[in-house]
Length: 219
Image (cartoon, rainbow, N blue to C red; front, side, top):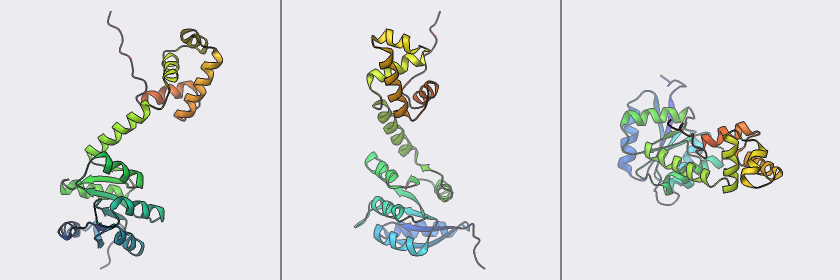
């Protein structure tokens, strides 16, 4: 009897045979999955993904020859429809960030419980981002760090005054600059934040952590 079209076709990539066998056996026991192939390195993974057309590639990172990051970048660059879920023991930013930047849909650690791994593969097949908590924390930290350096000190000062309800004239007076300079700073802020007006700039700044809501002063 043929399998349903809803079955998730999976390619398992890991340089350790025992790990590959264990993962393949685990997924084979679930009727929602079909392991269509196994690869011991990135180059083999790319070749098999081209011919087998899996829905999800379960990708190790540290492998001889072509590693998981390079293989992921190669698959994405070729327009292969398979989504990559990284499964590794490494959770440092030197591993997480390159994998996500290469195009991986998700990043999970090998100590994840079986049920969590199954859910992660299902979510990856749907195109949903899946991140181990430690990986998510690293990415959030990097985003906040990048955001804090996005605007100049003067642009932040202008934005704070605008968020407090100040007009261009009031901001200019407080900062001892001209209204034209305030407008110039606002245009730069809009461009950097990808917005089109003052209200959107303030909202986006709060979302990115550039502005922090002030608590009311106690009487």
